Structures are given as structure tokens and as C-alpha cells.
Image (cartoon, rainbow over all chains, first blue to last red; front, side, top):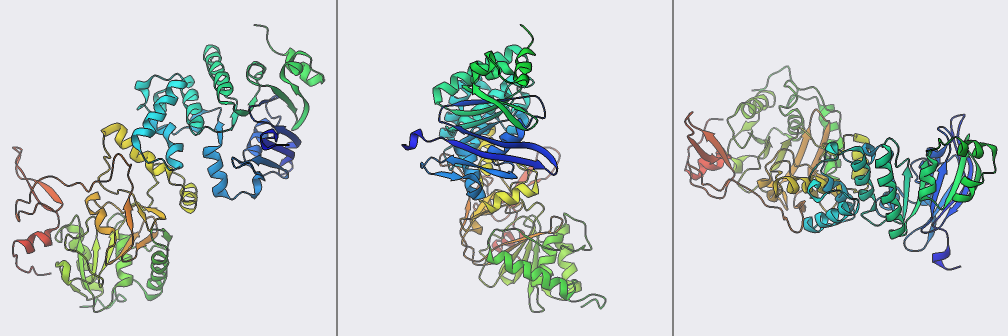
Amino acid sequence: MSDADAPLLVAEGLTKYYGRQLGCRDVSFSLYEGEVLAVVGESGSGKTTLLQLLSTQLAPSAGRVRYRLRDGVTRDLESLSEAERRFLFRTDWGYVHQDAALGLRMNVSAGANVGERLMAVGWRHYGRIRGTAAQWLDRVEIEPDRIDDPPLVYSGGMRQRLQIARNLVTQPRLVFMDEPTGGLDVSVQARLLDLLRGLVTELGLAAVVVTHDLAVARLLSHRIMVMKGGEVIETGLTDQVLDDPREPYSQLLVSSILPA
Amino acid sequence: MNAPAYNFAYLDEQTKRMIRRAILKAIAVPGYQVPFASREMPMPYGWGTGGVQVTASVLGPDDVLKVIDQGSDDTTNAVSIRKFFAKTAGVRTTTHTAEASVIQTRHRIPETPLTADQILVFQVPIPEPLRFLEPRETETRRMHALADYGLMHVKLYEDIARHGHIATTYAYPVKVDGRYVMDPSPTPKFDNPKMDDCAALQLFGAGREKRIYAIPPHTKVVSLDFEDHPFEASRTPKTCALCGADDTFLDEVITDDKGGRLFVCSDSDYCERRRGGVEKPA
């Protein structure tokens, strides 16, 4: 098996207990380059815990996560030093928070928000940093004259798009998204999803998208994982799971969508 | 004259030992902020409690002390700290930079180049260069540990985006010995180049924040910048109205309420010497 065919990210038996409280149990899957995996389930089903385990923001109680780095070597993420993990986080990974305020520096300009990652990896030319930031703002449909405004004065949808630009500027291969459309109104959601879908295809991004919104899963993802009570109860291709759910809980989930 | 109720230089010997240990550690790791058990001093925070503790710990009976505040030897802060050590340590004081063996300063580095047998002690209000960008102390310490300094350039980027140039004029961040990013306390950036490869030992004390850091003699100190917006040691492009110097850092003095103003050297000692001034009583 050549390098490019090997999975990008492999989760093996990921388990997390918060004391005696179960976060998630025995989650295993592989994610390949360019593949989008949606994790769906109701609140408290362990989706966000799983995302934090995958992105090494939480240490698992059991199990491990392996990741194929840009040099082609697949390594256990726990064996990386903190400096390496940080480097990974600001180059090869992105993390889109539900609340844009968590993922952005609200008081510094949009340009600096996008440029921060570039400066962190050693860019020291103001003109080039600004130019690249402007390009990315354009790609996420933010007007160029807003480049010096802080996200504090942006609308919710713009903040979310800015957060995406900030994450993608270093051309990561893997993006984690935690409810990327949560808290936005429907038309803004549609525009954001459209944008995300375009970028994901264009850049060949792999992504893990946590959402409770099955429409988001349908639009963005190739594969889907249904979680309940901290465990994965069903996995499969997105259309297969959504159109022909096997587990009673998945059926309930699918049938709870209000008809438009 | 030694006030009998005090130990030499006010602090007790155990405290001085503790502070000296912190100083030694700071010298061993240039630019690294060493925590220390800062004491209550008989002056309010913000008046130089950190600098005073460092000075008290390095001062010996044979030292000659100079204290400057905003470059001047005769402003309140300078006078009271000089008096404080004259009283509690009985050391000789001076206003002449070349005569002093220990110089405590609030903002400026003297215009007269420092020598290897001198120690410059800075009073530091906020030792953490990342403070206003990252409020969490746990996070800033981690960033220092990992040399994760991208954020520092975000600040400079913001300056250029807003003002067209790097508008930070004081507390301008520097990288010490190629490793730690350091806040040189509220010194004007005009003085940053003087820190680089300086012959004297430079010590920084922050009393309220309980940190000591240091630049050992002849250490590389680089001001952060962008390739297309390089660091500039800015000064007011005027000459001193008293001594005529055109290469010193100037203070603007308002002379009346009709818009009258003049510019004078902020380093009062240097200005006086240039005018062939007489020795002032210390």
C-alpha cells in the first residue's frame, strides 16, 4: 500500500471517562485524504468529546489516534511533543468552533486573524501576509475593505466565514468542525454550507464534522457516524444511513426532521 | 548615615539571598522571567518596588548609586529612591552616569555608553510582552516555553494595519539571545539598540508581578519587526534647546498656555555635561 492510500487519521478504541461519567466508548474508524466524515447524534451523545480526543485537546482514557504527517510517517499523536502538536495544529489542521469567538481573536483585525498562522510559522513580510489574508477573505466572500475591522463588528455568518479563512490559510489537510452552522439563521447557514462544500472539494480537505443537523451532514459528508450515549451505533455512507437507517435510534433521528 | 532600625539597604539578608538567586537564574537564562517572592516595600506598587528590591540585593557599601526617572535625576521618583538608599544603605549617590556603579532607571538607558563595571536596574510595571494579546498566564508561560511567538507579530501587524507603520514606541518587544521574547519595560524604542551587546549587566525587576529577568553583558538583543517594515529607533526630529544635541532622546516641554514648547534632552545628566554643567549636590 503506497503512502497516499494509507489513511490520514486512524482512531483505535477511543474511550473517555470524565470520572465515572462516560464521554465516549470504544470509537474506531479510519479517515482518508479528501474524505468528509459527519458525526451526528443528540446533545450529550459524545460527539464533541470525540472531536476533542481526535484533535488531542483531551487525553483519552483508553485507545489512541494515529495521524499521517506531511512527511508520510504515521505517528501516534500521544507520542508527539507539545511543540510538535502545536505546530500540527497551526499548519496541517484546522479547528472550526461553533462559537466563532472561541476560534478568533475578537479584538484584532480580520487581516491579522487570518495572518496569525502565517506569522506563527515564520512569515515576516507584512505585504505578503496581508496579500494572502486578502485573498482568503475574498475566497470566503468577505469584502476586501473589511480587512482592518475586528470580528467584533462582524455578523455571525461573517465571523464563521472568517474563522474558516483563518483555519485554511496554511492549507491544512484535515479540518475539525464542531457544529459549524450552529446558531446561524437558515439563509446564512445555506450560504456557509455552500461555501464549505466548495472549499472542501476544491482543496481536497479531509474533515470531521460534528453536527446535530442532518441536513449539514447530508450536504457536506461522504460518510456518517451516528452516536448515542457515548457509543457509535451506526456507520455508513451518508445517503445510505440517512435514506435507509438501520438502527431504531437512527430511524428516530431521521424521522424527527421537520418537513420543509 | 545608616538608619539603625534597618538592615543594610533595607531588605533583610535572607530576602536578598533569595532575590540574588533569582537574579543568577535570570542571568543564566537571558530574557526568561524568573518568579521571586516580591516583598512589600515602603512605597506604592508602580513606583519601582521591583527595581528597588533588585538594587537593594546587588548594592554593596562601596557602590555609587544613580537613579533616573524618565531620564531625569531630579524628578520625584528618582529623588525619593536615591534618598531611600542614601538613608538605608548609606551608599554614595551621584547623578553622573560614568561615576555610578549601579543605576536604577524607570524608562531610559543613559545616553552615555555603559561600561562593564556597571549594573543597570530597570523598574518594570508589566513584564509579560504577551499580556495584552493573551490574558492567561498559564498560556503565556507555555508560549514562552515552546517559543510560540507568532502572536507577537500579530500586534505589530495590527500597528501597521491601523497606522501604516509600527506605532509601538515604548515597551517594544525584543528577542533576547535568539530565544525569549522580552518586554524591555516602558523604555522608548529609541533605547532598544543600546540593549544589544551592552557591556553592562541589565537587570529587570517587576515588584507587583513578582518577576525578575536579565540581559547579561554582550548579549544579542533584536527588536522584532517585518522584512518590509524594519525596526526604527525613532526620536523627535529636533535638537535639544539647551545643549543642541541632535542625536538624543528628547522630551517636549510646554512652556506657556499659548502653544509655546521646547525640546530638551530627556537624559538630564548627559545634557548638563554637554553644557559643561557643574556638579549638583546629590
